[in-house]
Amino acid sequence: MTNPYRWWNAAGLVLMLAINALAVWLPLGGKTTGELSAQYPVLITPAPYAFSIWSLIYLLLIGFVIYPFTARGKQSPLTARIGPWFFISCLMNAGWIVVWHYEFLSSSVFIMFALLLSLIAVYVPVRRQPPVPTSADRALVLLPFSIYLGWISNATIVNVTVVLHAANWNGLGLSAEAWTIILLAAALLLALAIGFFHRDPFFMLVFVWSFIAIGVKDGQPDAVMLSCFIGAGIIAACSAYLLLRGSKKPPGAAY
Image (cartoon, rainbow, N blue to C red):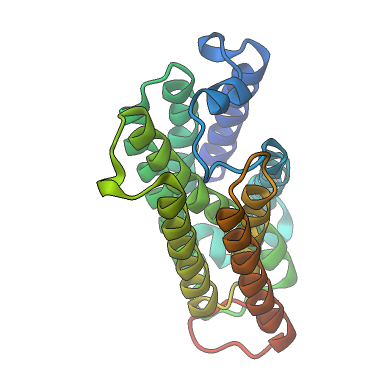
């Protein structure tokens, strides 16, 4: 069962990596990602080190793209389920980088949501059963999109918050601190809902990484810091529970 989109996926990943590299080396728009983040200081943006997760995401996606070219990957039904959606997600990722670095903020939100939706279109089909995924499927198909979707879910929340901040939204009378805690609570519920429904501890662990990075950021208010650490603790405990359950997988769950 050869994946008809494997060459599309390879081309899409090369494009995405090239645009991301140009954003750092040139940089696009004359500003680095760090300079842009500093320009829009919202409380829910994580500390700079958190963005190193992209190295892991890129590494996993490279593995995913190579997998269908291997003998075992050609037999995997999971990669065929993805269709053109990974290629589309690559286009959205590259497009977001361009509009973000040239500060078309409103457009960046629409592209970010398109990226999120394209990843959901990848994530949901590959986690259906049957068949039971092999170890290679878990490492090279399921895991990459658990991590990628988890991070883009967090990034979408930050992107929307930045755009509202830039537009001088009054927050309906609530403080930035209060809104940050509300958004953290929403992210917590999202992590638990998706994590438990799909029995996916790795999706949840991305939120632990994000929450801790938000909490330790310099100048973070005590209430936000405490909320981050409590949320990270809850999600980490739930992730550990799912990991300990191991092979007890209900219908429709991949882990």
